[in-house]
Image (tube, rainbow, N blue to C red; front, side):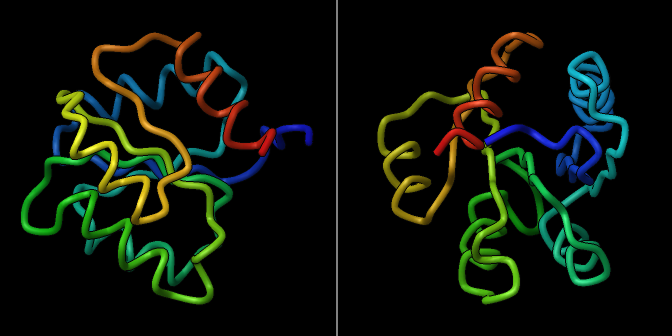
Length: 127
């Protein structure tokens, strides 16, 4: 399946520098339509108002973590099929397993580059 570079992408992170980095990487990969949210609850609000083709979320955020966001997204029928990539600084096996069980499509460990992001996105849309 070809990746639609015009699809809206939502980047969720409580660290504005990380949002800027991911936004720039996405731009390098040809994605122009990038929105952002500073935590899980802000992301859910945005998702209710706009259909996103991909969500890229940090794991560690307050007050709602990326993991809690993922569980809420998967529980909502209107979002349950939205591709979701989790970003984290920790490569703990139990986190990866928990995210997979909760329905994450892919998992990226920081730091990462445009090529890693591209590969992870391609894997999500090849499935």
